[in-house]
Structures are given as C-alpha cells and as structure tokens.
Amino acid sequence: MTLAFAVDVGLALLVLAVAGWSLAVRDAFAAVISFVAYGLLLALVWVRLAAPDVALTEAAVGSGLTGLLLLSASARLRHAETSAAPPGPALQWAAGALCILVTAGLAALVLLLPEPAPTLAPAAVAHLPATGLGNPVTGVLMVYRAIDTFLEGVVLLPALLGVWSLASDSDWGGAPILRHPRPDGALTLIAQALPPFGIIVGVYLCWNSADHPGGAFQGGAVLAAMWVLILLAGLADAPPIRRRGLRVLLVAGAAVLLAVGLAGVELAGAFLAYPEHYSKPLILAIEMALVLSIAVALALLVAGPPVRTPS
Amino acid sequence: MSFVLDLFTMGAVSAGAFFFLAGTLGLLRFPDPLTRLHALTKADNLGLGLIVVGLLPQVAWPFGAFKLIAVWLMGLFAATTVSQLMARAARDGGPSP
Image (cartoon, rainbow over all chains, first blue to last red; front, side):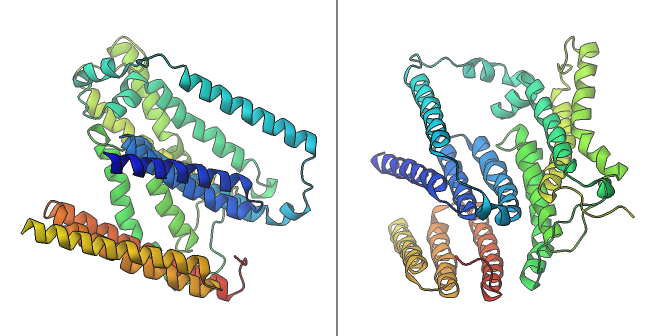
C-alpha cells in the first residue's frame, strides 16, 4: 500500500515537472517532445486511477497523434519562430493572471466538491445489462450519451475541412504529401512489418470495446498511425482529397450513427435509442464504421493540406 | 520453488533497472548524439529485456508470457528503428540537440 502510494506521489511529481518543463522551455521542438512525454505519463496516471479507457485515449490521441500534429507544426514554423518578437510584459502578465485564475477556479471546484461526490456511476452500471455491453465506458459513450459520440465523430470533419482549406486554389482536390525527407532502410522496414500488427491491434481495440477497454477513437488512432507510417516511408501516396471513396469513408461513421439514431425514433421511440435486443449488434456496426472514419480523418489531419495539383 | 522464482525475478528486474539507470546516466552525460543513442539503446535492449525475463515467472502461462515477450519485441523493433533514424539525422547534420 505504502509502496503504491510512493509510486503515485512520484508519478504526480514527475507529471508536474514535465508539464512545467514543457511550458518553460523556449524551443518549440523541445516543448512538443516534453508534451508527448507528459501525455504518456498522464496515461500512466489514468491507469493508476483505474481508468484504462481514458489511458488508451490519452496515449493514442492525446499524446501520440496530437504530438505528431504539433511536431509537424513546429517543423513548419521553424523559420518563423526566430523572427517572431516575444510578447510584451503586459501580455505576459495578463496571460499569467488568467492562468492563475483558471487554476485557482479548478482547484476551488475540486476542493469544494460535496462528500460523497455526486455520481451517476451506480445508475449507469445498474442499467448496463439491458444494453448487452460489459464495459460501462462503452455503455456511456454508445448508449447513454450517444449524442456526444455522434458529435465527436462529426467534429473531426470541420477540423479536416479547416486543414484542407489552407490549400492553394490550384491544389484543391489534389493530394497531401507526407513523406520523410530521406526515407531509408529502417523506416521502410518498420513501415512494411508493423502495419499488420497495428491493424490487428486497432481492430481489436474497437471490436473488443463492448466488454473491455478500448473504443473507436483508440482503435482509429492506432489505424491512423499505421497509415501515417506507410505514408512517411513513401510506400504509398496519400489519395487526392477529391476522391469519392475517401469522402464516403470520412462521413461513414457519422452517417451510420445518424441513420441508426433516426431509425431509433421510429423503432424505439427516441433519437439514438436502440431497439431492444438489437443494441449490441447495432453498437458494433456503428463502432466499426466510426473506427474507419476516425482513422482516415486523423491520418489526413496529420497529412495536412493538399499540395499536389490534381492531375 | 516459488521462492527461487521470486528471487530470480528480483535479481533480473533489479539488473534491468540498473541498465535503465546506467542508460539514463549515459544519456545525460555523454558528449554527442551518437554516444547518447548508444547509451539509450543499451537501456532499451538490456533493461527492458531483463525486466521482461524477470517478470515471466510471475505471469500466467502461456498468454501472459506471450504478451510480455510481444511487448519486448515491439519495443526493440521501435527503438531500433528510431535510433537508426536519429543516428542518420545526426550524421547528416540535422537539428543539433
């Protein structure tokens, strides 16, 4: 018990130290690296808090893919970074004051939580058997709060549109290029050998999420990482963004969820309600469509705006 | 028998932790990227390997053991690739650390 407590305290101090380092360091590249390390440590914290679903999401999306996005952004901004003037003291003081205000507000909220903290967890677990699911997190995401999951699936699309809209007019509809400047033997080898395993892991995370930790976002992030690896090694080119199949894949998850939700109005009496006894197969079908859409959207977010004129 | 296995676990995991410590020390103290990579990959190979070997008697046979070995192999594979890429970047005069 005391050993576990010591590990937890050490982990918390480490997280704080890495967070402080990522704020204090002046170089954007170093800041991104420490942000990735921070995300991985945070995933360990979620494991210690017995929340493996959140830990998987943090590791795959929060640390992995967000880190990759920030890394490519810092590479693009490398030239602008040195020329940008540092913000004046007034702006720095204002930012510091706002940060302190937010932190103090959050701390006050946590400290003022009623004892015992209000929770819907017992009610959520009590009705879980009716959904046919074994993992309460999936139950919340796909049954009780399916509207949130729907919006999460949808919100990736405007984000992707935002990235695509940075393309120049002549490149619109063309393909993004995401390639290591000098792809060589080691990168080619891992891009050839790892994807079979990664695809199995990604599909497993999604397929198994009914009863075990995992879900469409975690699985989608792993699948996206495999595609990004193949693109980086130059083994395949990113598809032109005007390709119809690609766009169908992008909207498939949200479209299936919307279709099931609308059918629920007719069959079960409410939007996003599942007909009795069919909830589990429907949820699996939604998750399978979602995982594909999320994987494609996340990989294309990393790939960036199209830069190759459509032929 | 279980006492012997526990002793084996303690020895191997401690040895693994020692290699991680030594690798971290090298990472902090060595003068240039290539020697630092050398220290880091030693920690990855031997440290992680010894910890996995040490934990093998403590997990359910066979699937727990297979999972641990798979984690080790994946870690080795990723570390090897990354160290190759970093070494080439350092050789070709990439961003100085």
